[in-house]
Image 1 (cartoon, rainbow, N blue to C red):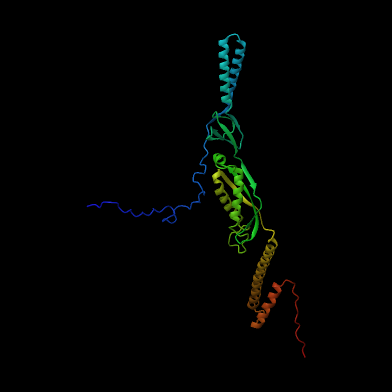
Image 2: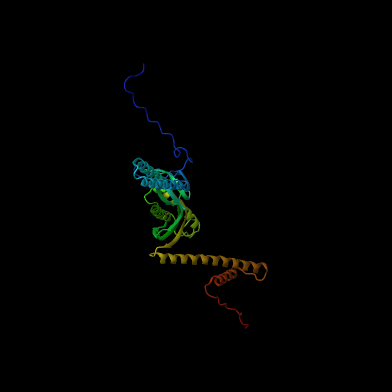
Length: 336
């Protein structure tokens, strides 16, 4: 007999593994979403607006204006005929209104410009075709530049990966790719790009050291191409919401901050001296080895251990010394 009464709740079933759960190597990590209300972001994408050649509309509006003028002249001429005057005035008003409706949507789009079109506040598309164009009547148009822009960020003082304060600036080359997002998703897309570019420069500069003496890792000064590519990706991910694409980002200014510049210069000079000394010693050892092997192989002189050590020491002093060596010639002892 089946049990009666309230049943205990079933144990919760484990959720199926997602693209990043239980399936290693599948999917890509997602960037953290905006903090706050989920519906605060404006979700709009550019689409093509309805547009035709403006010359036909211009010709039609001129014809209607001519008709309105003729009807007005006829109404003035037939001032005594009430019905004729009423008909002429009506024709004049209708023709003039239709002419305005045809003439108002006429716009001239310059190369490198686009027009974002709204119909009573609703986005209906973007007109990109240059020249005289006729768009939907009773709409508002906003001009958006789609030319390539560039600017240089101010010199920012940040701490690199080693904690050293550095001054860094970058040149950002960008262009509006989605005019709808640039117009409706952010308040001022130009200022938005400038602020986000500075934030990206600060973030990337803190993840790399200014210089890598070993030459095996990435650094701000030695890995210019890698750092520029990382900067471009960082800025592009930040300004994607504004419909902007990044053409190029390059570091234009990079230097230690003034408070540690002198100390860092001395360290670089010391590193250069040590590297030069290593090269000198390496070359001197090779030359000494070659000289001793040549003397012994040609049978010019046979040297024991003490004499060989003394010769090696003398040659190293001559080859590695900073000053010019002054030889001392041993003339031997006089016979008694």
